[in-house]
Length: 178
Image (cartoon, rainbow, N blue to C red):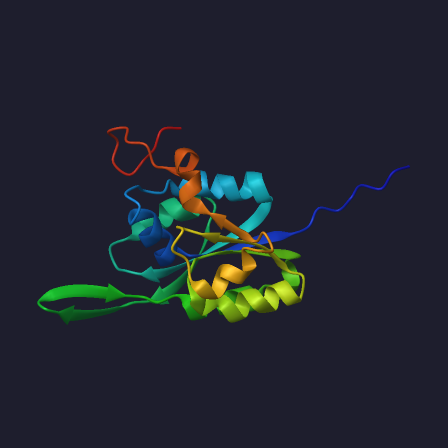
């Protein structure tokens, strides 16, 4: 009798701001539901932790993201004025690193979704421990600190997946074609 090969447990840890702004800088919008499905289908990611700044009034967005299969890790945000313009700041780097380490014993491999060099030490640690599966960078303009991981085939550029992950306009606000 053959034993079934146990599939590795894969978790994704996502810097929502880096992903959102990176894709937006390329002139398109990410379909979050399709992205979660991509993580599930391509990498068998059982859990996807989305680190995101909490802004009052965005509850419907948060509900949609949760319905799409993300586990939200909130960071309180700060509002400040600069040149008369209100800016909301919610850097989630520490939350992503902390969540990755809190969950460390619960996954076999991790996917880090960000092109931010601030995650270099985390990515390096995961690679050394054999727990890094992929780094999903939103654009070609990811940090030079992460470039060495490209030679080890860890980097996947999300901008190259635009055709399958782009939000299609349907006339229904905030939704994409099924």
